[in-house]
Structures are given as structure tokens and as C-alpha cells.
Image 1: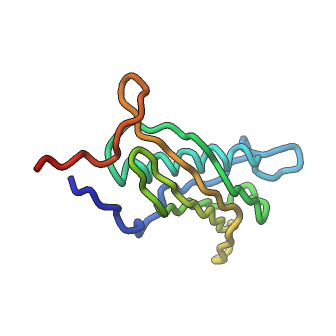
Image 2: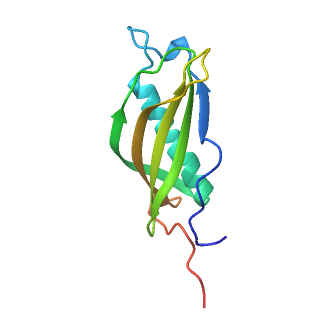
Length: 132
């Protein structure tokens, strides 16, 4: 496997229809549901970059711009913005397509840091060392 960062995917990491079970008492989708989806999308992107076990070490710059409603189709788009020795920094844009419309809005964005770990939960290099 190449020791090089992959270009952004042409497809979202996750796409889901928001169901009534995800709503708060006011009928909007819980922010925690969106945060969980962000964490899952970051894991998908990390695996796309290089196959390892990863853990989330931080979620930064989380901004909720608009509410998400029942029936909206939510898409999470990921872009790896930095790969360190054992960590990846991934920016995620969350877009919502309200039902029965062709419009799409950015509803949330976040930056997540993931670390590659081994079976003993010790950090490991994302890309294998080249033997010369």
C-alpha cells in the first residue's frame, strides 16, 4: 500500500434518512445523533485512507448551522486534511436534503482526529515504514 494520502472521495461516507426515533421533543433531530454519525463517518474515511483499527481522540470545531428534520436525507462528506505518523485529521461536512425538495444545506461541520492503534491499543504508524 502506498504511503500517500488519498484524494477526497466522490461519494459521501454515510447517507441516511432521518427517522422519528432520532428526534428531540421539539421534532428536530438530536445533535447527539449527528455527532454519532460524524464519528462513524470519520472512521469510514480513516479506513479508506489505510486499513487499521482507529480510535477517536478529539472532535473539534463542531458547528451546528441549521436543524435537521424528520425525513431529511443527511449526507456526510469527509476530507482528510492531515496525516501524521499515527493520526489523521478529518474534516466532515454534514449536508441535509429536506424531504420533498431538491435543495441541500450544510447543517453541521466538524474536525475529527483519529489515531491508528494495534491490538494492545498502542498507537501505530498509519503508513508502514519503507525498508531500504
